[in-house]
Image (cartoon, rainbow, N blue to C red):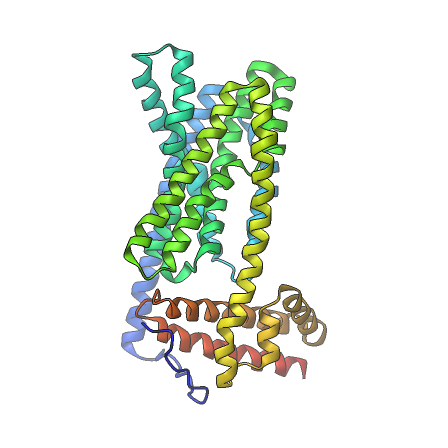
Length: 394
């Protein structure tokens, strides 16, 4: 689909045929399908949670596992808000982000537990136990864990393309999934440290894993997310294959190097942390800031066509492309029209972001067959929400 298709500013957005029997049947099937998906996901996550909890409880005990659970929540409060900040221009559906976290915390962990243990058992037959642990950590775990985490990002791209808009979304889904994985992994390590070494061991593990390297897993997995994001915006079939693969390989290599330093311990770990991990973390933060600013510029760029056609004013485009100006607009709506005006302004901004990123997908021939219908629906939302907050303010 070409991105050069004209937008008619004078065309009206027809209302959906809510009274028709066809529309009613379609809504009925959608509701049934939604409940089936929710039911299957709930059962699946529930069984995975039971399996993971049983495994950790068997290794460390219930009380130590609960202590680890509470302490492991601290880095979650650091990592997840970082990716929510990155996701501010065009927020992903909350249900998808919750599923991403649960996938990382439960499904990916269960996959990793199973395959890492299997790999270690294979190695036990040929090398001593300590060496098998080190070899598993360096050569098995990075591949298995990055594949398990990255699989969710891949599924979102392939099954929910309308919710996947490129590099930013790839980073957000990868980061939240990895945060879930790290959360469960931290519970296990903290609980075992408490059982084996008491408060001193718990404190050392907390400082090392939760304070000094809370972004380790997200930094690995966003390599895969970036690769999938590049693929989502590419027209070339070879890029759609090689970009995710290249991102995955980088994620595995980075993870393996970190695990190698960890099993080496002592000065090697300190050297890798100071000379590699810290610079990579600073580069990661700089890249996150750049990606967010880039998304604002893209929103301004792809909304310009709608301003030229009369759907938006140049001032609105300028506001929508800047997060500080968006905040000012929400504050203005709240101060002059109350909460309802604020909600209308928020919906207006969200719809405009979705519209800009949809236009971008159309420009790159990455949109699906519903693109024009979605475009009309989003334009209709813009018109209605503008009337709402303008009317409430006036």
